[in-house]
Structures are given as C-alpha cells and as structure tokens.
Amino acid sequence: MGFNFNRLTVKAQEIVQSAIEITQNNNNQIIEPEHLLAAMLQDKSNIAYSLLQKTGGNIDNVKIKINELLEKLPKVSGSGIGNQQMSNSTAKLFDIAAEEARSLKDEYVSNEHILIALSEDKGNAGQLLRDNGISRNIILSALKDVRGNQRVTSQNPEDTYKALEKYGRNLNEAATQGKLDPVIGRDEEIRRVLQVLSRRTKNNPVLIGEPGVGKTAIAEGLAHRIISGDVPENLKSKQIIALDMGALVAGTQFRGQFEERMKAVLKEVQSSNGEIILFIDELHTLIGAGAVSGSMDAANILKPA
Image (cartoon, rainbow, N blue to C red; front, top):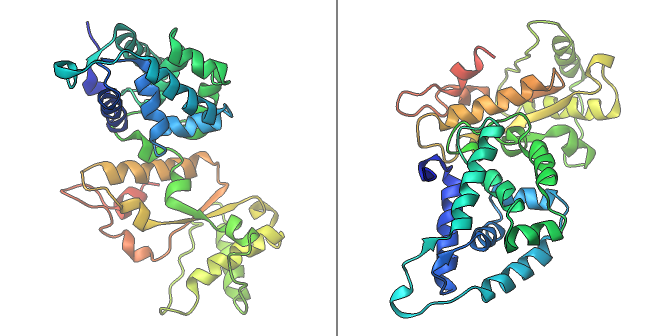
C-alpha cells in the first residue's frame, strides 16, 4: 500500500511541490531524494532548515554539494519534460518518514520526519548529510530543542513550536539589552504588583487606568527590578513575556488555527512551572480576538487557564 500524501502537513506539501519544480527546472524526469533535500535547503522558513542549522553541520557545503549531485542526474528533453515520477528510493523515503511520525506519536508527516528519513537514506542525499555531521540522532536532539513536548496533531504544527518565542517578547531580555527605558516614580504600584504576584492563588494583577498614565511602564519596571535582583526571593528567577496579540491573530483565517496557537502559548507557560509571568498589554483586546465562524475568542480560552 502506497503512502497517503493527505497525511502531509501543509509545509511538507509545499516542500514536495518545490521538489517537483526543481526536478522540472533541472530537466529531470525522476524525483529523487536529492530534489527533496534541495527544496528544504531553499526554504529558510521551514522547520527542516531550522533543524539543519541547529545540528551544527556544514550547511554551506551541503548546499554546494547538492547542486553538484543534481547536475549528475539524468536529464530528459522533449515530451519527457513535465511528466515527473517518483523514484523507488523517494517512495521508500516517505514510508520511512511515516514510520518516524508514528514513533514520535505524531498524527501527520511533517518536514522534520522527511529530514530524519533523508538522514537515513542509503543514497547520495543521505550520505551527503552524514558526511557533513548531520545524522538521525543529532536531528532528533535538535528537534527536541525546537518543538519541546509539542506533537504534530494538525496540518499546521509549525504555528505551535516555540510559541512564546514567536508570539511574545521577553521583557527581561529587553531590559538586559537596554531596550527598555528606566521607570521613575512608580514604586508604589510596582510594589503592589509584586505583592499580588507573590500570592499562592488570585495572583493575576490587572492594571487599570487612563491611556498614557504608564500601565505598560509598570511591567517594564518590574522587568528592570527582576534583572537587578530587587524583588522577593520567589520572583528572582521569573521571566516576563509580553504577549503580542497582533502576531497571535495574524493569518488565522480558518476555525481552530487561533485556538491552536493560543493553547500552545498557555501550554508553554504552564509547563514552565510558574517561571513565566505572561503580560497581556491592552487586556480588552482579548474579547473577540481570534473568533472566526463560531470559534472561541482569546478571553474564553484563557478562562480555564
């Protein structure tokens, strides 16, 4: 029984389409693993490219060598162009990728699974990766770093990887790098926020006031205090992440996409064991945010959390 291409994630389908285009542009008739690897190296936005960077392998050399390998593949002309077929080794590659997805308890086959399968390939593409220090175990180690405990449960899993990094801004880092202005004259308010944050329950302070009076500045002042150690002992290791609602909502036109991103953010916050303080600027924007065709808005998703 052949591989079901409906099991591919959207990004994986894009890579396959890109590989077909590379095959056509190179006047090849057979789609080989080399074409898939070349497609992954072209698209810097996909997870496979991020993994290749994290492995510490020699990507520049891989890029040069893959083009040399493509040049050596048999070329066709005339009626043969545009009638691309998959080689047996490429078909087997997708079967191995499906096995990798199953072993990682993923529901869809994503680019990371195809990359792992490529690293085990017995042909030139796999050998090229291994020769440049990119093996299966190294990719799996990098994968754990990129996606943590997230699993591929939809066709857009990349939206949920490192969600806080994508949809949030670390105020501690910004304060360390001198990107936040010093806060003067808000000691009483900052002290009260620290008091509320230090409670065991009911520890979510909400800052209410007229526009421009300095509500956001209190969160920034808190970040300054944390990095300088001027906070109670229980708050010294905390990270303040400012949630970017614009980035969170952007591009979520279909039902379920926004909930997926929001839940990924909440999951990361919860799995930090209380080490992350989530700062939501303009709290009123949660009402109705991300609600399309009957799906829940951000406020309702946050309620149980």
